[in-house]
Amino acid sequence: MTSSVAAQDPVSGDLPLRRLSTTTSNFDIVSTYRKLLDSDPDLTKPVAAIESLIALLNTVPSTTVYETLDTVKAHSDRLKASVENPVPLTAGTDLFLQYLVSSLKQQDGSFDAVRQHLLRNGRLFAQRAVAARNGVAEAGWRFVREGKCVLTHGASRSVTGLLGRAAQSLSGKFRVVYVRDEARVQESDSVVRELRQMGIPVAEIPEAAVAHVLGLLRQVHMVIVGAEAVTQNGGIISRIGTYQLAQLASKVKVPFYVAAETHKFARKFPLDQRDLGFKQQVLDFTTDTASKRPEDAVDYTPPHFISNLITENGVHLPSYVFEQLLSIYGSLNG
Image (cartoon, rainbow, N blue to C red; front, side):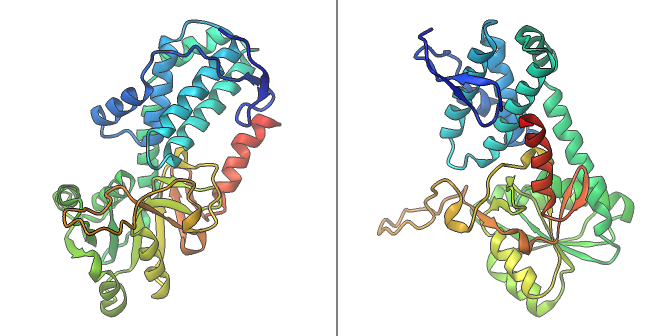
């Protein structure tokens, strides 16, 4: 390996990392990440990123701590660069680097011990993610009361799990308004079918009818959505349209809840819609009649629109995110 200058990395605290050498692994982390997501529908993007890094360690020969951290960071950057929205992956890769450095400190820098532990328990992160989703359902289902109506959109597994848990206790004696996404017909059909199979009466509405249903009909008692990532200030990055849902809910004084696991907490502090930290082509002015709108676009919902975050650690105000991240990364750097 070529020599390089030592530099302190913000994730690893006082463990210096050498700059990336010209020799890199042939491991294809992007392909590994995509295969993991395709093969396991229960995996979230942050956890798939973590499992990809664990798979990477399985291919890296035992070497120095610094070289290993350098390799993990380089592949993390490569993975994040492969997607349009890197924030969910950043939440996972940052968490894994924090865990790796913390484990190395506890092992007095013995990389072999940490590496073997990670390889033996490679699926532990995924198992914890599923458990976290169940924890979100347990923490949040009591918001759904008999005779009430919940509005939701997207395909959040945390939200579906929460509604399913409520259906078990309330025998389906509540209703759901589902905002149908015409750009994702199969996804919308799948979510509605799953909810109805749980015994929950579901009404589908187009996106254009949300203001009518929320404001004029007064049929909705709460909005519950998921998130791709939860930002440091307690806002969320989620399916595009979430921001306007939050604004409309605020206008008619309907509580707006976000169901999200804590591994989606990301050290990012957006100021507004222009400060997501990545580019997406929402406005595409063209005369091409075959042009299609972007399917994976997201928007940012500021924390003042969010009534509560529902996590596996309980129900919290948006300020909980900063406290949690400070606890994780502050203890690491302290």
